[in-house]
Image 1 (cartoon, rainbow, N blue to C red):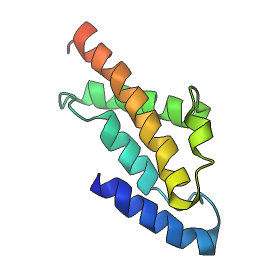
Image 2: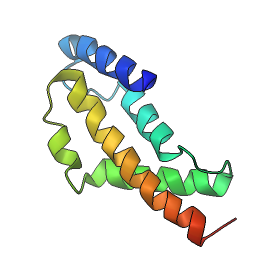
Image 3: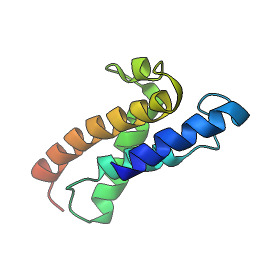
Length: 101
């Protein structure tokens, strides 16, 4: 939660300088990956699968993720990656159950 709050505040501030959701802002990606790996066993295989799942949702933005980008300021920057992380985590939890390494 701390990373998300810092991300919202940071994205709000740099938006004035760099514009909306500039590629220099990566705290949203960090938050999304942390959520993806939340409660997942620490194994490199799961981390790699989690990265692939997160990037899939982050790039394609299905299931309402794109809509969250429309939120104002830092909330829009952070919210889409948070939801992408949640979706990736749910699928990764299934992978952990079905494909134990």
